[in-house]
Image 1: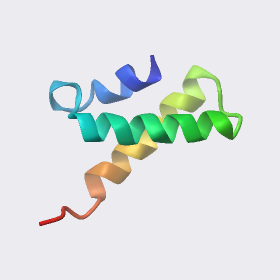
Image 2 (image 1 turned 135 degrees about the vertical axis):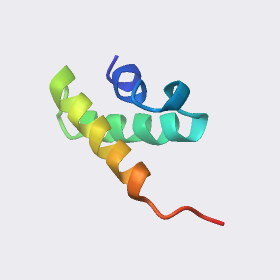
Image 3 (image 1 turned 45 degrees about the vertical axis):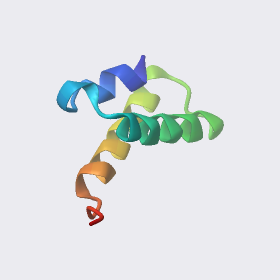
Image 4 (image 1 turned 90 degrees about the vertical axis):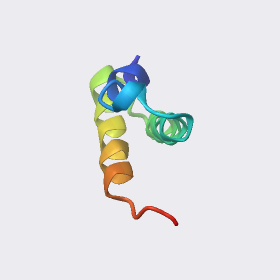
Length: 58
């Protein structure tokens, strides 16, 4: 649910690579004990900020 909520902010729900990155960050957060919807959504939003600010490869 957190993945869908966060990726809804991306055009067309995000491409495969973006969704995969966010999902990996959600899994990491859950392994660290962040298991509520709010905590996971926050982790997902941080992943989106990273994706939006990451340098684009050529």
